[in-house]
Length: 399
View: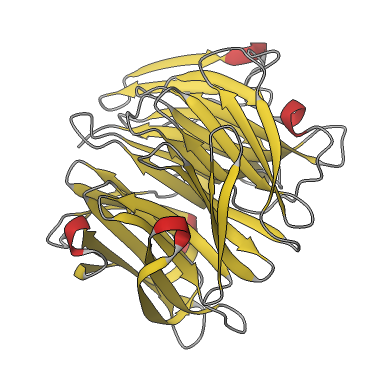
């Protein structure tokens, strides 16, 4: 990508903390200074981007090798009425090694900016991006994270009406699986790495396919069933060739979100059930064994109360890690063991003179010896009447 050293937004700060916060290494890239050096949690490595009101994380993804983690985000372009897509890539140690403005790849395309987009990274460090376009289209772009080469950009037709892209992954066969909503129905599509659409399957049961995951037993999708204000239940399906439904289950109750995460041998589904007042939530996690298809093995309650932003889930060694934003904008991370035993990993708290509030969070994990967890979030810092929004990528140390 042209001008590879033009780093995220106008400034990115890299902070490393060791022990109780005794050593701070601060490098401000692109020659632009950040307003203040905010304290990170002990052991965390953080990269912070000053953000505006429209800034948001659209997707966070890592390859199976976990040597490349990418964050896709949107922000307002100064001097322009539109929004810009940007991509930042980090290595296993949480070090930024690539940042790119995706504007040149999307030039001339009328994209539709939602709160989610598709992002996947393969073992060669190549990133694949899918965003909604007009009239049933999806803009598909390819960017090599390790080389300064021109990227590929194509348009895919998955329907005829409005489109939303919610998830994308690299399958075991090397194809890309894309999910979302089009023409009022959920869809899943298979796309080659060269941007060739192999097939598209629409699902009448749901208004949107919210997430995808792959296990040893095949591709799994979760979708939201039609409802008046929120989803009137969730639909969980194991998909066969060309997206055909091989097995399906439903989760009754009013809900706003559901996410899938984990590895090939262990799958986690995290979702909410809304209370009668439609304000309070119960966040549940179900764990599935790959050999048992979609037969539920364990259920754990992660949170009860007022929820500020959805939970995500990722696998780290034998544990599943869940992250969400709960009442008063607090970031909460929990570990869930195969026996459905839960334990808190982290809960943020306001500290004077800075008061930090989280607005969204996404998470991926590294299975195996490293056991690291990577998260991307939008948060705000308030001191008196001043408030600063910022996007943050963080690597949490193995526990």
